[in-house]
Image (cartoon, rainbow, N blue to C red; front, side, top):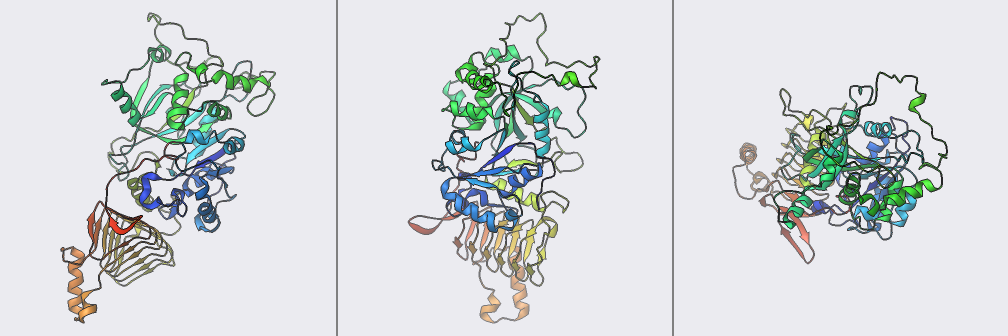
Amino acid sequence: MPHATHPSPGLQAFILCGPGVSLNTFTSSPKDFPKALVPIANRPMVWYPLDWCHRMGITDVTLITPPESAAPLQGALSIHPALTSITPRPEILAPAELTQTTGAGEILRLPEVQKAITGDFMILPCDLVSEVEGSKIVEQWLALNPLSISSKTNKRKSGMGVFYPTQGVEGISHKKDETDFIATVPIPLPNVPAPTGSLRPDIEELVMSMPTDTLKDLIEEDKETSLRIRQSLFTKHGRVKIKTKHRDAHVYIFPSWVKDFAAKNEKFDSISEDLLGWWAKASWQNGLGVKLGVDEVLTEQTSSGRDENGESNDDEIDIASLSSTTSSRHQPRTTPSFASRVNVSPSPAVGLTTPPPLLAYIQPSIKPPTASPSPVQPLIRRIDTTSALLNTSLYLARQPSTHPLAHDHKLHPTATVGMQSRLSQEDSLIAENVKLGSRVNVKESVIGPNCEIGNNARLIKCLLMDGVVVGDGVQLTGCIVGRRAKIEGAKAESEVSGESVEASKKGKGKAKQGDGEEGKTRLVECEVAPGFTVENGTQGKGEKYMAFEGGDGMEGFDGDGDDVMDDDP
């Protein structure tokens, strides 16, 4: 049962529960089954960010969803065993103007959302799976922001994002994973070295951020072979790191003034590309802060003589000067700058026209393994593609009972296993009320509740959602099967012709070897939509089986959609 393991950091959390276009095989009907309820390793997708928030001490959690998806979400929170264990129960906010195609930047401007934000807050996607302790990220944000906000010095709390490497995680990374183009600069080092396990060495200031697809479009529009960057970036920062293999996790910690910043800029359609992208540029591009209205937003914050938390800031208090551990021998280190011989124009004074720095936790890239193939740091992933859904589910199924995201039972006590069936429990998950027939072979698979697996079936690296029926002799490899779908299988020949038991055993042995005999259902790397029936004898590879309006036939096609609402918060 998830529970708060740390004191509350005083943050609100808003989880965006969007349509899941890139998982359209399983989310084509958001009125009945929204993306937030798609199971990852036998738990609803939204359980993972909810559990992550509760473990870092955040209990003020709100799910933002289109009105048509509010009812199924509310029902799941009331009856699903994994979600009912989370207390207090999160609130559901379904703004009337919110649709399945509303951008996340526009969501922040909706009146209901503006009213719900009452202080510093976090934005998360519903498809986040993170082994990194959220408390460590929040700890760095708190440490790098002043304890006392003063209008006299114009200090304002900064924001923070999270970026993770897309390559190097064996069994999870995919060559088609989305990436972002980001540029960062180092922040001043602390006087005292960070302790072991701290994320401080990986915290940097973000000065540029955009999706790689947007970068390619910009280069094509300008008919160039490279991206042009303003000289003012290198004038202000002497050392800039460019990264192209990381991805925005769409986890953001925002101070309360960002609510007004988003409301003032009506052209911000997304958070990742627009709000973060322009904020990062405004820290070094002269005059951009004024165009974005940063001066007006921060002026409104200080005009009342109170800080963002409503506390009076008439008298500035220097917390550092009150410390009894400060030593004159240890002076604060500054960010590297140009040598005196380099002729650069002076930087403008930092004031209300320049926003606070935008911080980012940049998870280190995974180095090639030497002795062990396992990742060298905790996993952070967005589950917004079918490959990520399958691979992450199988990854979680392999974890031992000591893992924070592990299940209590890999083979649920209510599941029944037929005679002579082989089940690889160290890398599989079998949920409650599952029935496995005789001579079934299950390896590296996740089987949801109330599934029925027929005799002689074989499942390898598969994900079955709840209520799936798999017929006799069916062979599935690398497949994802939606809830209450049916994969028809043929009856054993001995049951029809009355052959001897010995002959029956020989026939089953041939089926296990996959000798290509007629009438067997074999699917490899396929997706089956919820409620769909795959007829006996179907053989496919890399297909999507789903029904379309106006026809009940079986369709197979390739291609992925782009998430709108929660793919780019």
